[in-house]
Length: 258
Image 1 (cartoon, rainbow, N blue to C red):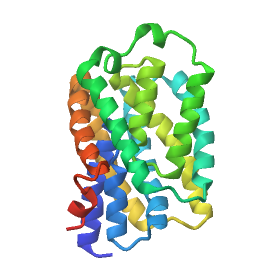
Image 2 (image 1 turned 135 degrees about the vertical axis):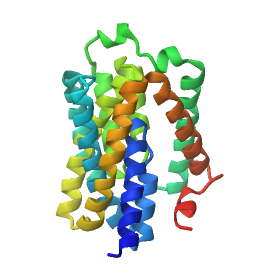
Image 3 (image 1 turned 30 degrees about the horizontal axis):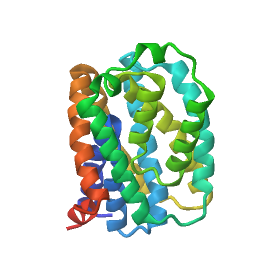
Image 4 (image 1 turned 60 degrees about the vertical axis):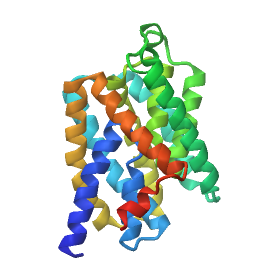
């Protein structure tokens, strides 16, 4: 592997770690870079789990040190997500990518609406929900998010954030801490499945993973230091970019591989 390739992997990792820690969708970048370097889509999907595992472990550790992680609820919500991840990683059917991308673009618009026009509901948390016990409906939601995350990973952070904020009542900063904890449990299960099926390339995954450590540390500390509004503005920008990508207006993959 050349110095240029190593540099590309590390720089991409920094962006992926930052984006995924504050919001989600960074896997669009990592998957594109892996495939640009010659990995098949299946190998890229499996290798990407190494990158995400390193990034989420770093972010969880950082949020824990800053005392914004609610361990109890994070563990409870991660259990159904973990089980769903096991199913998702083992799914062997094809997904119509075009349909998925259009649906995902719609989800981006809904989330953008809440962030811009109903910030009290999406950004600042709801104490009356936070005090309630986690119900079966919420566990089922995270089970299905886990299936999706185990299967493809891309954009999972947005679904997790929506479930944690709207369903569990956390504000956006604390929701990010819970999100990366759940994402870690999902990706570890999926990674094991991909390793068993020999669909992982360790060297590029670990190199990009080193870059995600930097990005995750920067993002987690900025989230706590700058507060909810900072996270809000970052997510607004990222939602707009990924909406353009998934709606077919902008192709991030082409921009990366030029």
